Image 1 (cartoon, helix red, strand yellow):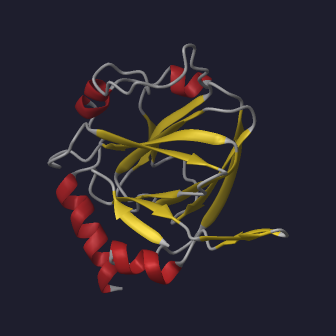
Image 2 (cartoon, rainbow, N blue to C red):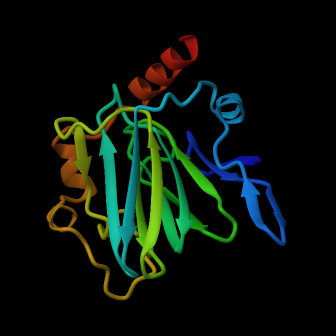
Length: 199
């Protein structure tokens, strides 16, 4: 398993080693020990999600209050998506920047998204399946959405006519979310992540 940091702090791309023969394929798509060594703490699993999306569907940008935040480990066992991580931590050196990774059923890569980061994706194939391992359970009281097409983010989604949920289509832009005081604070996120290392 190869783990490399993305350009956004606390986000990583994971590429598993594949073992194939005429019978099929085997790979380890999640290893708590190897991820913990890179991230600095284990990803405690509280919830697992699965979504199926038609081609051109864009989901996100979603994020949660920190604490508790919600770290995610995401892979695409069928089809392909462009997976996007956005730094929404006010005060971060890369605030407002994003990084993208193609997740698909060929390379079987995964992405780790740390607490305080925003996450979204665009389905590149019909019926793309995404699987998420999450550090906390869903809590609508602490979860937020940011409009994925906000020009302030400038994400070039690879869909000429993105299909959004009603919630994502009605989401505010980055400036409005920041003015409302909903964005995570970088210092608070760093302290929270350090507390996970102590545990």
